[in-house]
Image 1 (cartoon, rainbow, N blue to C red):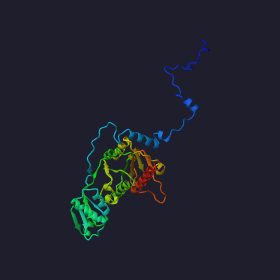
Image 2: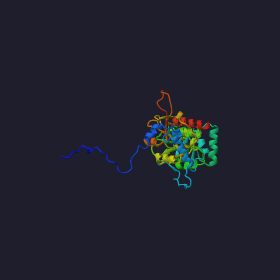
Image 3: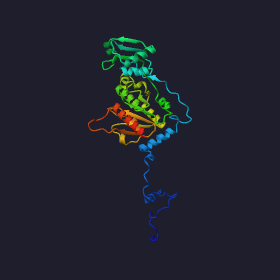
Image 4: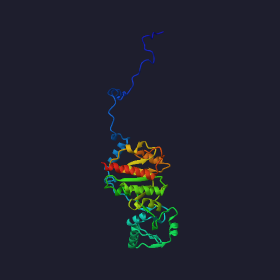
Length: 331
């Protein structure tokens, strides 16, 4: 039997690997050097400041909402919401504002023995000048026409169904503006909330309101009334798909800010610069939908005391618009 004492034991020799050897990738050197300085907030792509910087850069790379060299796209024509019929705009302020804005009214209804004031005189003057038929009706009949909950103040005008713009038309229309401000509604079905938001947009320097085609309030007589005539000055656009519209706005460099009671950032702690903004307001009960929440650049909440559980959509939008207007005025 041969002596194998000088031979290595089988399996004890490490075989040389073929091909290039894999190193540590510099991990040991990085551990010796320590952690690098924390990047600035605007240089972190996941931080709201970084998202605002990216949105601003995308917007500057476009000609106010349209990429350089891109031909202007054909947008759908302004159209009325499906199944909408002629509306009655009621109340002296709402009627006079609608007539000033040259809304194509087809009839003016006035209660008998109506007390005249400056607004009523102006309503009559504009209606006579434009040849709008003036019909005098008994007050109970006007009550029936406008509904039990309507405070018509003795006057009402009949207007055709509201014609909505396309959202991208609004963005193209403000391509010369440095910092346009839009408000979109997600699941807001009360027309009074819509009217209140339109009024706040007008009061705090906003440019337009966007509503989805489905599961949303439209510009009805109730919205006209609550807006106190602001619906004649602030355009309202209809989005066939709100989430896709928000994505399209983001691609054009608009920073999207969602309002939700469960937001991880306080409204007061978020800085607002002069970049274009789109504020998305959810319903009071359900808040923002999941897809819209995932699409927004930041989700913020309004700090409130424990005496109130939440704010309705109209008030939340008003507080946010005021805060943005205040901060922009200080710059």
